[in-house]
Length: 235
Length: 109
View 1 (cartoon, rainbow over the protein chains, first blue to last red):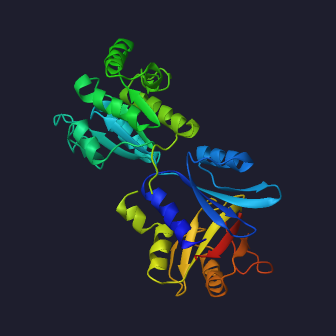
View 2 (view 1 turned 90 degrees about the vertical axis):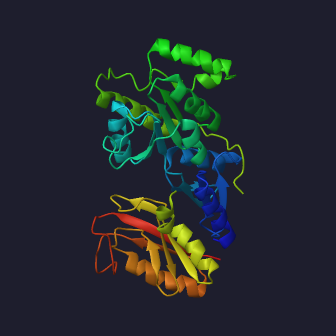
View 3 (view 1 turned 60 degrees about the horizontal axis):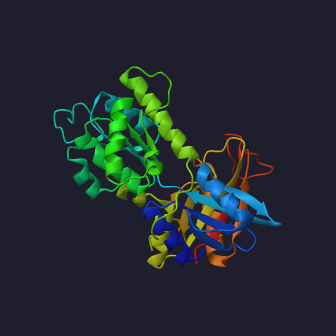
């Protein structure tokens, strides 16, 4: 592999863009492509499938052997609201390998005692997300059901192409939320990406059970997501 | 990726080393059979003084990969290595877990 190829690959990884290194095992030639780049033919299909599964493997095409090494950014979960569900969800998501960040401007909820060892930000979401923006490898879960706190990050998650957007609230709460977002100019197709009521329908009742339902839905979205086209090149 | 993770990242290390003028080889697990400690795609990077970062197994075959890597650095010829169950007649080193791995070692240009 040439140094320039490695530099490109590392630049994508630093920018949290999924990338694949394709090495021709016969010649040793290597090239880098980012998720969403056009790649025709059978090799394109193999690479798309590797991006979805996150698994690296050797593929044989027309007598040639290629090693497809896939580099996916580590997924993050951002939770809006330092409530009871968030306390359990933060721990469960960390165990499942996600980076976790909790954002809640209400200092009565967002206390270090309730969230020991968790990245907790006591700012308004608009400020917190300016410092560290959402991206396509981030799941956004809004659980305060206070429009003043939840609406902005939900809209931001749709704009940034988060792989999962979930919002807690009854069907009625969710319907009025959709009305407000529609008034902001979001199309129904975009709004359909919001999971509300949040979580897989497993009849979850307690905060811990609801956290399981939400985490399972996040994992489902991560492992079955469509290829999201990059909006801009990192280079 | 946070800064601590980047510091321990083999490919970031390889880039830094190469840019500071060091000769570097990259070893990559490309295939695994049975129980293998590190999945396909895992990296170990080595410089010509045998400094290394990363892993291709749980510490079972790194020593052998490093010595092959020194060879790859001096000749520039990539190598395909295969490691299986420890068996003195077949392998000098092996994987106690019973798996088998294939490791590709190449020089960074």
